Amino acid sequence: MPEALIQVENLSRYYQNHRAVNRLSFTLCAGEVLGFLGPNGAGKSTTMQVISGNLAPSEGEVKIAGHDIIDAPREAKRHLGYLPEHPPLYRDASVDEYLGYCARLHCIARPAVATALAKVKAQCGLEASGRRLIGNLSKGYQQRVGIAQAIIHDPPVVILDEPTVGLDPIQIREIRELIRSLGSERSVILSTHILSEVQATCDRVQIIRAGELIYNASTESLNQRHEVSFKIALRKAVDLAELSAIADVDHAEVLGDGRFRLIFAQDATPDALVASAAQLQWGLYELIPEQQSLEDLFIELTQDEEAGKA
Amino acid sequence: MIWIIARREFGAMFLAPLAWVILAVIQIILGYMFLTNLDNFFLLQPQLLQLQNTPGVTDIVIAPLMQVAAIILLMVMPLLTMRSIAEEKRNRSLTLLISAPLGMTEIVLGKFFGLMLFVLVLVSMLMLMPLSLYLGTTPDGGKLLSIFLGMLLLLGAFSAIGLYLSSLTENQTIAAVGSFGILLMLWIIDWLSESVSSGQSLLAYLSLLQHHESLLEGVFDSSDIAYYLLLITAFLGLTIRQLDRERLL
Image (tube, rainbow over all chains, first blue to last red):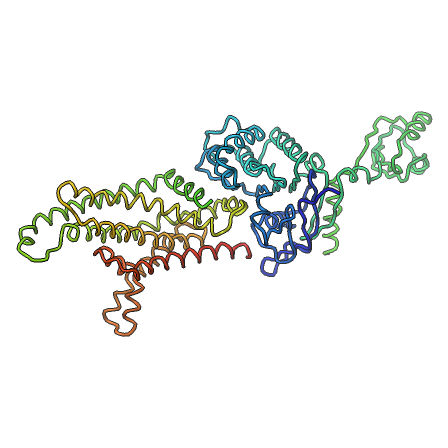
């Protein structure tokens, strides 16, 4: 097993009497991109602030590359790049000045600053903006500067809190590519509301709710785990029982208007369905594979809570 | 590391017009006062010649000038210190410093020395006026040095107090008003000492400007130096404690 770069154990965090994070434990290995999901107020940002050393944990411990964030904060922070929810920018500085300052703060020697700056600007698409004032940049470019700030010292662990907020679709795609490229050599924790983003960029998903970890799986297994379901539309009226009788069909339900949802057994293909549809002339004109998406899972898991409360 | 932060703080001050305006206004007002004092000195000169053990040009022109400078700066320094931490809190850019491999002490000292660099520029510009006297006469060099040191220590104390107030709030105005209040209080605290007999010396000891006066007279008393150094250390310590505490809330 590869070395764990982030190790969170039994982490709890209280704000006065309100418990924002409750006994959270997880580890993150090198080269892994972890998606952090949760409804608003679930404790995502709090967790990230604790990992980055901006908030002290009430209980539990956080280790970054083996260094405890409380006992050896300097060593731990040296291995960490952090983009908070609000990028910590100086609006009155130019991009070059700001990034140069960040580089120096992260112990990059003066002669190496220029190369680090050029590299990170190329990575984040900021080549043309070096002399512009950060305050005059658009939200998307400010966000890029924020990401550049987090990776300028080449940290093995990068924490990004909602990095794609306020970006346009093209920028979002670019940032996702950037995150994926980061993930090839580093560990990345990414929090977001956008579920498709997690499916597109992350190796692993964690859903937290009310400060507790309720789901933790790789995105690959997420795609495999669920049954294959198809939405079909038929011209001819067909009995539900007839559909259920087809080989490999586990379950069928009526959607109305000649449409049905068929749920197949694991790894099954709708061959038998197509064959019988042709044979019995059902007039099959739509066959749409439905994958149970992260969104369904997310809603399912978070609505459990609503139900539990009621 | 402290130096990196201090340089950035110092540079950032000049990105806004405030620092330039403050330097210009103080220089103009004190320049005018300097000329008035000099004029008075010329009027007094014939009488001074008849006295024995007369006060020199440093005592008549420079010391009163610096006394006024101290009072003006008491009102001006809160404006300079108010933004240093409060603004970062409001912009949430303090995260940058906290996430970097730095201790709180380094952050606070960096901010403090950034302010001190500005103070150094300011006091050096003020000292140009007494130094210009070398063109026509010979002021007391030792006294000038003592005055220079006194100004640095006094403004250092102003900065440390302002920095602490700035760390308490996100609102710059509150930081400015608060530190102005404390500075003013520390100035007038010895006014009472003349009418109150008990605790008289304590109140006088606490007064910011009391200690400044002896340095202006060229009396280099280590207890005055200790007073300022203690005050600076205490308020910087409070600032560090305050920022550390915020991580726990």
